[in-house]
Image (cartoon, rainbow, N blue to C red; front, side, top):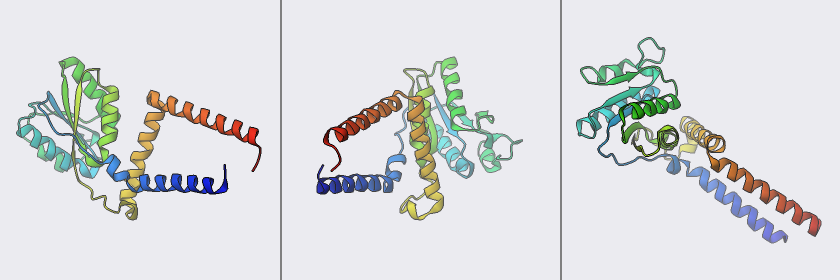
Length: 214
């Protein structure tokens, strides 16, 4: 490969990587349009729990479901992460409270159990906007085949120029790390990607041996 072609290829790859990195917020942040469902499941999330509960209550009040579930240790009064303000929002509401789930995976496994036991074909999950892709990936992975999921989100962080904000940067890097490891180790896409990478490296090294050094 000629030096000029190499420089162009390296520059193109570098530009694509930088552009993708700076647009992580556009990739991870999103939300689904709600539809009539069998249950609304609100995921706890530390400081974001109150906003998520408010959105769950709004969806129930709007008639999207009559079953409300909240999930996370933030709803356990005996846990250090308990959020009293979120609990007060639920006063007088008909709600199933799961105060045991420490991570999103615990909530998705609970949703699987309930969907099987109660034969729910459609579920709404409520979380933060930045948590959209992680939530969708986990719930689609754990829910039985045929169960439709809508992940409705709360835009509780302004990610404009996120790379200049250490807290926002940490959140998006965490989402990227989870998403990468999840697809590498829990889906066929990881094995396919690694296989293609290995083939590409093999072909490149073989071509180098045939041509010899430039």
